[in-house]
Image (cartoon, rainbow, N blue to C red; front, side, top):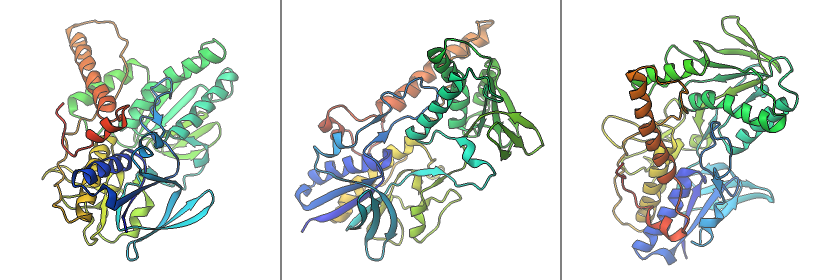
Length: 402
């Protein structure tokens, strides 16, 4: 009877776990002895749901394009309950509840916005998935069709100043102008506001980078409100913690991201983001048949740094998790996880400022190099190859050289 490897989640971590598991099962000549199943709410993986992309074309692809040719089973559904004691997962699907048994489990369920009881939360938007980014775009199109004439229609408020918040606030005006040009050809004056929960933003960047971020946001006339927190959100305005009222019909949340609730089904330490702690092989301590990868994991591939909630880490952790799960199933030594150097890339677009002095010329030149590095990281290393078998070949767990 074949051994059952079950993967929960079809994002970066889950996808690469499945591909890596195929490669390694072939490598140790056990492909015919293991059945690999991936559970995901939909048959697609979202690559980069970014607002500063004017089109969502190419940001996602069908999972079955890779899974079917490799003999990986896919169940379209949502894992609701995990029982590690009986090796069982309860999955809700369109046709009803399914109970899945496993010999080995890879938890790669990802993360989502934390449920908030903030008054008026239903009036907000986010870009944590392509569906939600599309919902936001449809909302902007509706505003554009009315000429952005309603109260607060031409004001966009972005809450959160880490990478997603910065890319969102930088790109939202360009997105709105493109949609308006398409719908009416007119041109409105937009107000863009960034709310920072503290005095510092983009905490993973150096002081020099923070200075450059301030330089770019100022050049784009983005209002930055430090220590600005939403207290009440209405359909046409928001109220901040200091009593400031801002007329707006578009509030975009980019903070309060936490790991999947499925981590609660496992014993052991969890961090403040609800992530499980794993050992040097990405295996959950106390469980002999569970690996975890991606945004559900607090991993440490070196003695100093722990992983961040970022697709850069998720794709590599997936490669390790799939590889090690197969090895563990067949009593082959595991490969210790080695964390890649983190390159926190944030796309700030172009400053659109004339060259006024050598400093601006130098910073612009360096920015082009940084943007090229970001494109390499986010395209070349994350997108699977068009050819399925080539994708399998590059799934080996190793740190690339940039």
